[in-house]
Length: 539
Image (cartoon, rainbow, N blue to C red):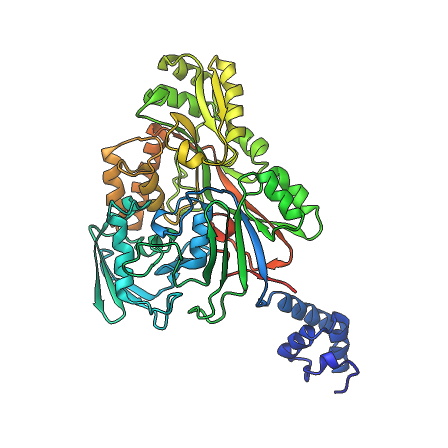
């Protein structure tokens, strides 16, 4: 078959898809490919369809090279490269650039092999992890069982100050059990251990590491520059154990707490990807040529936190009054602009197989709110601390303030700066707001934020029965019984905890249309903060 277009030289047969892709890569247009297919005897309609499919396939083929700038939602001098101490989006995303876990979570939050090429158990209490061969840290050291033993056990050391110490307490022992093999013994069975180990805090570091300033891990990128609260720069790890990853040469990562500034910077071409887009900015981004919005729906929530150990939250009736003041449907429409699902004052979202849909929905009810507020005896203005740092919290607080006025309850909304909010106000304010990203399992979110002794137990609600149910559910191999136990825990939180959860929020990221490869991982925006090794730039 002859042709005057040299870009079609690789197309030797009308059925040769690889040849079509090569031709398009060399500059052939759709019209060129259709003409060649028809010259080979193919009908015009079929030729057009095949050419369109080939063009789509080419557009979706990852391209290596390039540099992108990304903006996260926070900026604080407390940012860290120590996986155990990570506490915000910047830390989590940067951690995925530099490190790997034994497992990694896919789009259904199912654990997949990562540094462990396989894992197995007979009783959910003793787990054997076989490590992947040929994995190297950024400094050339080969991954060894000792690195895994050190990485997991350090979370139990109080001196480390691990943010997941409450989760790590279930690990009784970790030992090398053979060449390239590690055995993890739990204090009690937990069928979710592989999913837990796929989260960012449990990334693997070199044995004996105490200085994390160089960010030496096994991840897809190496650290080039790190200025906490300012920016970081990472470059491709040419010896990454995944031979086809990463696609990019370099990523510059900057934290910008102000959403308007993030959006403006994106649309002025300063960034290729920005996290945490406010729904009010969606139309502006979509209407700007060359930019798009990527939506991820998980169980991410902004919660009203009323401490049960101090302030007005010590009174259970005040807590109930505030929950009845939440007009969830109005918040969904007015605050989140429909980019959310209505929640019910408990943290397990409808996407989880353990979500309890039999729990009656708490309504917006001014009469009940007034009754419980009067019964509480709480008087005077009640300070409510909100911040742009906690997604939608200021808007939610102002709505609560308006509804409070209707029953005679005066709420003093105090806006705290986004910078430093998590270190200065979250967990410290008697009444304020938190912002909790989706966790991979029901056990993880319940342990980190509701277990009595957890450092992140936001409302300081303590229940011995809840703690017993939590431990029992981990060990329960019968799925039906386990689901009933989680239903009981959700009911307890709904009724007793000082937490009001009005919505499960969608995460909205803005990006240039040149950026490809974004996929939904419902742990949150930026692909559950794991975007770095998946995205590429179109030519």
